[in-house]
Length: 222
Image 1: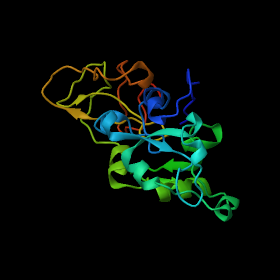
Image 2 (image 1 turned 180 degrees about the horizontal axis):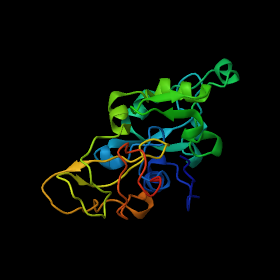
Image 3 (image 1 turned 120 degrees about the vertical axis):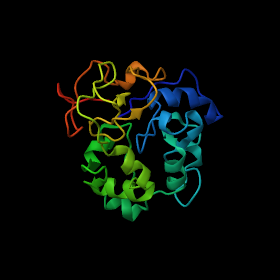
Image 4 (image 1 turned 60 degrees about the vertical axis):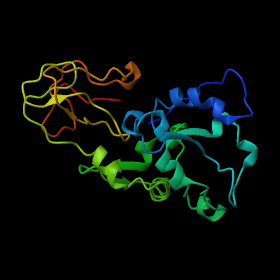
């Protein structure tokens, strides 16, 4: 997944003032694990990460308020990354963090998601990022893995013929698949009002294949 950046209307010395723009540019997701804010307790579950750290042996304090060095991340990825940065020797071997704001940093180029929701590194960049960001965390694997569901259930916006309701498809990692979530208490299917059009939640009633990897009418891209 790649996040195109906006051009800030003005420069700020206080980097926290970029917070609203960062949230929008990163589509309200963690730049690294791609978890959406709605699974993190909202905005409070996220933080601004300095891609090139402000402290540590390879610090770049001069980039502290540089918008291109700021990333919207979940607090856990932010804490795991901390002041970590590869040494010149590691960089020479290709070990570094992926940069999801560039075409070369697309998650799909460096990580492959397996059917159980675990990740397999494809490059030294993927291996380094996965290790230091701890992208193998149990809760992330659970979130990426497809859930079983009753036959006949449909994506949000369609009719449900089962006892389980579907609230939508999301894309927690850069490989398209359906993430089905059960909700209780309502007979109809209503996607959460907090979802924006840019989230591209399935709302057209595609029936979900048994594997939950694809909608019957094609992949769900988010």
